[in-house]
Image (cartoon, rainbow, N blue to C red; front, side, top):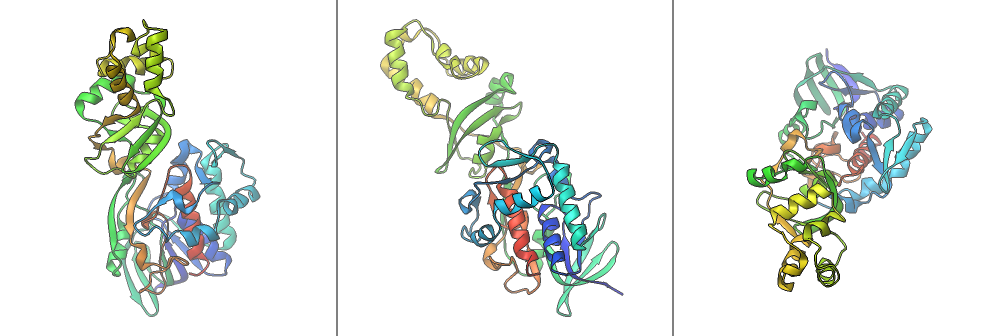
Length: 393
């Protein structure tokens, strides 16, 4: 005999647990199925183990989607302050790092414990180490064959996440279910991910691994003014992670190493006032000394400013304000924080996350084609989409 529940949620991550508590408080009998041995593994590792759980400034403009208006309804009905209120009711200490970015003060475990407590209070059941072998629609609901037997439910919520960080258990399960029931899945790719560089440039920058400097990076009409970090493999840091979501293979990046500065004017003035100053020394006044030295060598800049024609200074200024390079690629899903693309939102209700042609079937969180910027926005989408589904399922 199949076990029977009102709602079955596949995936015990941020969205799945939030949805379970929301549906459970409505009096629904809820089961959360998770194939791994622990719930919320991505919560625990995010934000350096302190979880950037929301962003107070999160708006629909902070999200990418092939259907950009889809996220508006859920985000407006469950706002960052709503989740912050929940965090504060549980007495979790939090800190604001960059503007609007909220982290647990001590550990992401506090946030996971909060979600598990909410599920317990709501009467939602959590079943770990349980794989789903098949899903079929049957008798006004859905039948699941699992490693622990058959389960029948009225409503099925797919909260299985995307493909990012496969070592944490990420799979394409949610996309497979969507396709099975006739929902298109838009092409997926790694987002919020570090860049790799071609061997020659990587070798030139490798000694600078660990150095960070503020930049303004541009690609495909978007730009982000945040720190860039040089790594042994390439370029990372907030600016690179942000722009990676807009980058496609073969696209160049334009990096302003001295954002907000009139570099051409400064160099020409220094040539008059301090003619013996070198370009390397000029850079070292703003950028880390080792970075300034390596970049000057990379551009073959040597000698004092007085030896440069104004046209040469203009060329140097153009390079510093728009250093153009073409990444070899990205580190891929292995280190990506999110998966771009996913279940086509044109086939879901923006109010409930329910599939338009499959009553009782819901998709929430990262599996859906809604991806946020870096800085807590993706967690806010997880909470908002989970609540939208949990209030109806």
